Amino acid sequence: PDLYNCRILKIILQPLVENAIYHGIKEVDYPGLIEIIGKREKDLITLTVSDNGKGMSREELDYLVKRIENKEENYGLSRQGLGVKNVHERIRLYFGSGYGLDISSNPGNGTVINVKLPLGEKE
Image 1 (tube, one colour):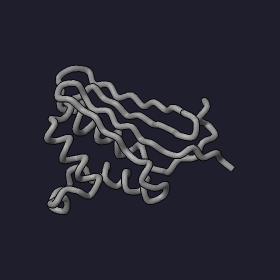
Image 2 (cartoon, rainbow, N blue to C red):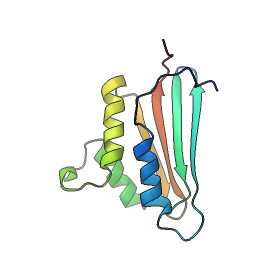
Image 3 (tube, rainbow, N blue to C red):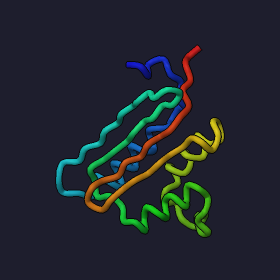
C-alpha cells in the first residue's frame, strides 16, 4: 500500500515476468511459482520478480549481466536477454546509473531480479 502513490515507468515488470515464465518455470516438472514484491525504503523503490524455476549457471548469469551492462563483445549477435537489457537501459536512461536491475540466480533454485527505482510520488 505504501507504493500506491508512487510513479514507475511503464512496461518494467512485463518483460521480467515473461522471462520468468519462458526461461524459468516453463522447463521444470514441478509447480512453478513467480512472486512480485514491491518495497519502499527511504527514497528507493525496490520491485522484486522471483521464480522457483531452473535458474542459471554462473556462466549464463555472468553473460546476462555483461550483456545488460553493454560489456559483452558479441551482444549484438544474440537476442538472449534483450527484454531484460531494454528494461535496464530504460531505467538508467530516465534515472541514472545508480538505478536498474540486480540479478541473482542458481541452477535449480530459480532467479531473482531486483528493480531499483528512485522514489517518485504521483503529482
